[in-house]
Length: 161
Image (cartoon, rainbow, N blue to C red; front, side, top):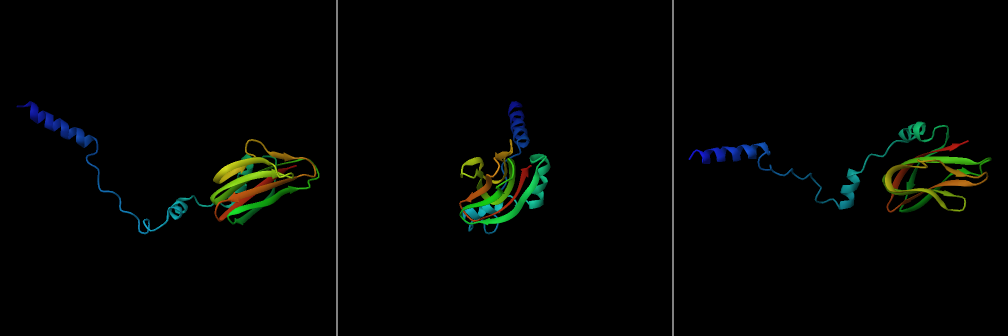
């Protein structure tokens, strides 16, 4: 007879140590059910990094390079190209850091429109992070941003010499 009360006390202690039964579910936020999935995903997207904070990455990302361009651009669904270096007087290397309101595909293309560095769709990233992208004297280096839907994109570009 003593064994049953001990078993009941042991079972109660085991339940108490596991946290007990689950509590009620958290209430849904107003408007969540009426928002389309894309709107909920955009609401959860990270804040757009400032141009100044992108420029601050130059100390680690573009050591020994000079800033050659910084801008905020609107990208409609489609592709936008921006010249980073055009017709340089000598061989030139570049790096670019960007941040966007929605994931974008970013690439650096050369004068012959070949992709020489790229990053899969992301809210932010760096091109030439593992090593700068270089072009011969007189060539061009362009930043290409592609988006499936409208986006605001901020970027900072560095080059050497």
